[in-house]
Length: 379
Ligand SMILES: [Zn+2]
Ligand SMILES: [Zn+2]
Ligand SMILES: [Zn+2]
Ligand SMILES: [Zn+2]
Ligand SMILES: [Zn+2]
Ligand SMILES: [Zn+2]
Ligand SMILES: [Zn+2]
Ligand SMILES: [Zn+2]
Image 1 (tube, rainbow, N blue to C red):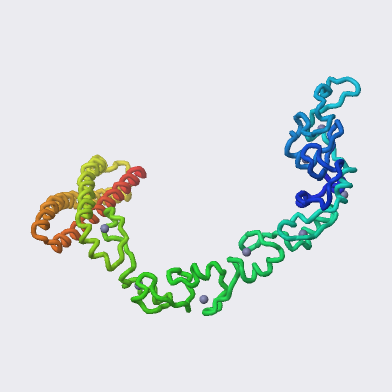
Image 2 (tube, rainbow, N blue to C red):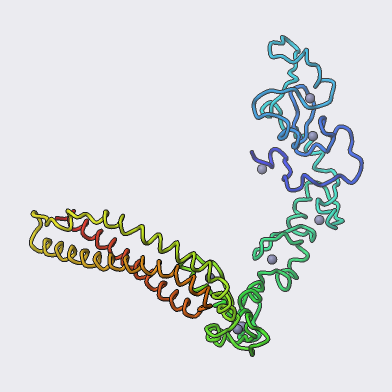
């Protein structure tokens, strides 16, 4: 619909309020507000744009929301009415633009819709949109950088000194940096985009360190006594993050829980080999694929030999690990009795290594098994 032809005012200025009292014939029959973009019902009452769009159905007829006498004469509403009957049930489709009323409303003197924000401009309604769009200082615009709504009159100040996304020049390295990033990353030793000229104390051991730049900090991290690190039993399931200076204490205090973690890991490992042995298809290790080409056959035989030898190692280690697990439990009691903590710790690291070996071997067996299967499929 051509808005000019329909004398329609832009929705943006629908919130403007008339300066003086509204004549009755320019009030909406339903809500009594100004007849903004008025429509007339078939029975002659006038509704404002908000009431038409908000209360009427597009095509389905419903009782008119207006309050004129004509709106409520229900007995006269039906379509079967013969001669002189006027419908009181209406839909958006049956209401027509009331051009005459719209022209009158367009000439009403109204306050700028931003009057609550501080604008004191009063104009004819028809000219208000131009004011709001082009010259109203209290009109809100969206800052392109931070997407916040800013009054037009404040936009200059906002973009130059308030917007958190404004660009600033770093006075150390002269780079252009977004304001919000200046603190979070450009002046932050822990950020990998930290200013190369910025220096500060280590955030972990602060008072005990001297100011350093980003490169110095990266180097310092490997020896910082307060930096938190993972417990070395994290692969067993210990989730503690401990500062380096507290590591010794953690290993001492958490001996029991570390042993329990180790124990359950070993029990798992002790269960796996029997499954794993069953999973190595004996027939596939033993039987050569007769249809394979010579090259493929050699490859298959080679992989099978490797599976066999890794599996042998694996089984031996399993026995060792089971023994270790057993002696661990005895040593734990010994350690309790003699307080042989350091001895126990040595034992722990030995066990730890073996658990890792078993895990590696398990992976190797699996990989080789897959290779065998692939080769057999090809053959
Ligand atoms: Zn036009
Ligand atoms: Zn209304
Ligand atoms: Zn009506
Ligand atoms: Zn204004
Ligand atoms: Zn902004
Ligand atoms: Zn800088
Ligand atoms: Zn430090
Ligand atoms: Zn731990």
